[in-house]
Length: 106
Image (cartoon, rainbow, N blue to C red):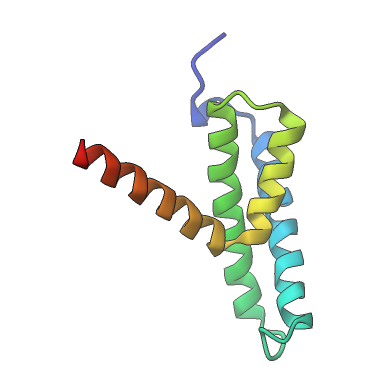
């Protein structure tokens, strides 16, 4: 099996990943509106949410590929992380900071 490389995936793969994560981001944004977290609909806020969701979805896809996860499970993780948006980035950041802190203490 060839080495995994971000440039070796086909465009259709990236379209699915970004589409699924943005769908999760849209669902998250609509949940915020219904929950009163966001006062009213804003195109710029929606676009920001979709960009963050797409970014997180691609990162999640890479992590799932590196872990050799089943594609259906990876798709679920991509959608969930897209729904989480910036919270997923924050969770990953916290995990990495704890991991780095432990490695520097050793």
